[in-house]
Length: 523
Image 1 (cartoon, rainbow, N blue to C red):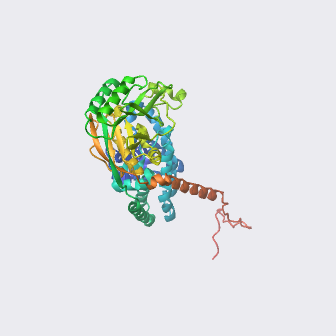
Image 2 (image 1 turned 135 degrees about the vertical axis):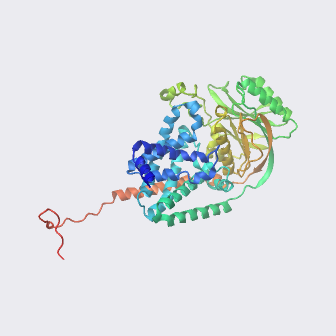
């Protein structure tokens, strides 16, 4: 009991409380790869909620939300420390402020002794507010949707089925809803009935969606080869290794060969000899080859990252220029103001140029939709490629700068979600691992290529062409969350503007005693 009281007094101090909020916000990182404790996501927010609900003031609750957001962003992106150094803490502090309103809402609905109605509202409002935070930070200029809470469920079969209904957004909503319900069960005894009812309703709705969601009907197969050269310093050595590995695919009856991001370090217009060498590989293997060129273009100014399809006669003309670039890694936002980031880390010395539209390529009998690195984190990009007729999604990536961190595992896991959302298989091909292939239901196909592998592997990839509810209806969980918040805003506004009832002043002043205290009524 004394220890509990001492801990409580410690949390009354501003700095220790802020430190506790940072640690509480960092806890969900254990649910992401590499630890991949997916089940932990359903309890990871409970300490953070407990802290915010006990805040003495609304301002302190908002600060608890902010500090927790800072901890969350640093933990999920900690592998960027070698590249951005101290700059990552500045970015995390700016983005962490998005959770300040969330902390305020936690106290508003769960603080003190909330009514059953307030606790019931929290089960809807708090997950909606979390989704709003994920929506804002998913903007490419703010770092994109890396580390969305729903993405922790990438290896859970039932969760992947739900992703086909509402995307990763629906998974995030459900994970937060379960955390809120558990917090109510633990700390709000008077509202345990609505909390249990919410958990039962969530389980019922989840089961119904699982049973109702159409399964991916496999209607074909494709043999896709992934070429992962491993760690090589310099484009020439890397290209030579890719060429050697690709030669070994001759006679394997493959339909398409995929190289990773930045697999070719020279523009093929400037180096026709490289184009001829890749075309010769295409003739030798009997398959077209999707490479990725990271170089200054010969036909227009600037550096581009481009997926280029090459057949037996050379480039086919199908080309996709990466549209969504990594902030600071491939360009510096507001370079005139933030250009100093290049002096404290490995920020981009020159901005890459971005493409203008997504492209579906015709690769023999397959229609393929390429995504480059960071773009595999965006649910909408895979959905649009599927709507445009892609049979298969192809992610080309390079995480060699973060080889011994959690980044390669996190990145590869995103392909499972994009596959489940769209009902299309996805190939995640990298230079140095982790490379993996996922079927149209999000389940992994064949063994993956880890960060220590240098190999070419052929995968028998199942194909499906049904339309998932997520592709058909889009980001409807986000629309629903914004509607909930809009209704909340209107309700709170009406309550604020409604005139308060005041008691009428008595016509005759109350009698007072000699000691100036109100006289007791005569009985």
